[in-house]
Image (tube, rainbow, N blue to C red):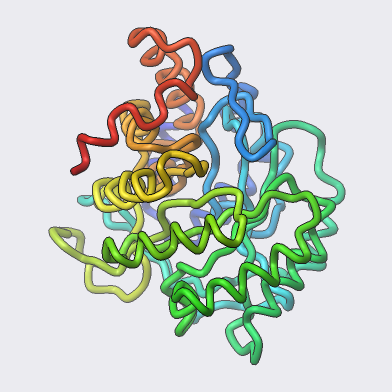
Length: 346
C-alpha cells in the first residue's frame, strides 16, 4: 500500500525531481527491500560472474552509484550503474525526462549527466559486499577522442566492478551511435579491452539497426572478444505512441520498446549461434516479459522504466514469478530456457 501511494505521488511530480526523490527514498525505512531473490532455478553465471537471479537493474537509475547498499536488497540479481564519463558533466538542459503514462513509457535526453569517473570510483570502492555491480561507461560530450574516454573509465574502475558495459548506443550524445560502425567499434573495443584486466566487457547496442548491421556487430563482438551483448538501449522510433510528450526528442524506453528490442535480441542469438551471452533489456514489466526475453536468447534481463509505474518491488515480483514459470515448464535452471523460443520472433 505504501509503495502504491508513493508511486502515485511521485508520478504527479516533475519526472527528474521524482527520480531524485526515489533514490533518496531508498535510504529510508519505507523502501521495499526484501533482499536478493534466490533459488536453484534462478542462480546463474555469465562471463564468470555469478548472480543469485537473472533479473538486473539497467543503467540510468543509479547513475552515480549513490544507492548501492539498498539496491542490493531490492530483489535484483545484479546492478548496473552509470553511465560514467572521465569528467563530470551536467548533461543536456532541462526538461530532459518525460513520462508517457498512456504508453507506459518514458523519453529521456539526459546526455550522460554524471559526477565523473573519479567520484563514482570512490563510491564503488566503498560499496558493500553483495550482488554483482557493473558500470556503464561512456565518453564526454566535448571529447576530442571518445574512444580514449572509454578506455580511461575502464582503467580507473577495472578493480572496482564485476563487469563493464560499453555504451555506444545512447541517442542523446551527438554522433555517439556512429561508433557502432565496424571499424570505429573494433578500435574502441580494442582500447577498452586492453584496459579491462579480468573484468568482462559487454557491448550495449541500439534497437534501431537493420539485420545486416546486427550481423556485423555480432561478428565484431566475437572477433574482439567481448563477453556479451546487451540488447537494447532506447529507441528513436515513435510508432504508435499516444502520450502527449511523444514528439519530444530523446530515447524512448518502456513498453513500446519490448517487441523491437526482443526482435534484435533474437536476431543476435541467431547470428551468434547461441554461443555469446546476451542480456535482454527493453520493456520488461512482468515475469512473463522476462521469461519471453530469456526464451528469445537472453541469459540475463534488465529493467528500469517499468519501475516508474509499478514501483521498486517490481524486481522482486518478476524474479519470484520467473522462478514459478521455470518450475511450471520443467526447467531445473534458467540457463536451460535460454533460446528455447527464439523461432517465435521470425
